Length: 426
Image (cartoon, one colour):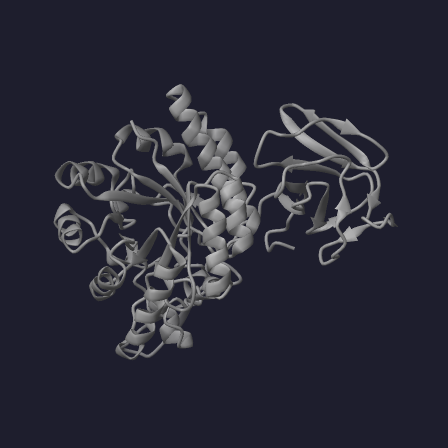
């Protein structure tokens, strides 16, 4: 059985590097407003995107460019030029939502694979065959599709690759087809500028049309998060997904999420997949617990293994965001001898080490100690020393001085600190 690809988000160059370091086989990213995450797309221009693609290719990792927005007639020349630029850059595939853009991409860059966006709502073998016949190599399954249906689809259309979302934010609307923020803010979600209106609290009213009387319905003091979907998490279903043998790529959502999210979630799914292929089983609960250290809206396994009408736990009506008990305190620099502070650190603090590799060794000196305890690695920082030799009484996020480590740690290692967040994240 072929091991499926693990596909991770790359919202900017740093997150691309982190996704690769923590185990991604491929990443997806976008340039310009033709991506459905246009704010993330602004993190790359064509020059930096080229460098990012080259960086990934040097490490044997593929890059898929998102061209999945829905262009208006006035934008067609811009889309055409954009596709030509992506051809020059040498991306491995383009993720596209519409037939017209697929046709133009096949005309301009026939050597580049086409992946059909989940926005196209492909739900059955008829859809898969039709898109295959116009040149689509891979279909990113609609999130309403069940694993049982995917097995049947693969039997009927074996020459089309199937990609599924296994983790990340879920849209309240059917397959992401939403115009809520277009109504309220004039920001078109289908062109990449969603304002995430479904995450806001709303106050509900009931009106009697005969009397004109209106009653306020209030479940919580700050309103009700009536449209707030929990985040998708299929880590505990990795064994049955892999056993089915029909999924070619497992995709993590989150180009606009934090670097820590990119690292932790990618590593959790990487380890779960590898463990199942090595042992034919997976202690996936430990990876689930690791995922809980990231900010989330509550987690649900959504619709892959259960039909929508069988679900009653996919909404989080209390809050739009749940904070974990861990805060990223630092990220190790490329020199592997220093780190940049991302929170607040004081002498004597003990930080847990989350590294992309197992290349960690114990050491102890005047700066501090790196040691292993109960299967986890820790850093005790006795002195906060800059590269110039200045000793600090504390260091906070925003300080641009690299802080010395007692000994080397792998590049892009996270140093995290256990904290206690209040419900509103303060």
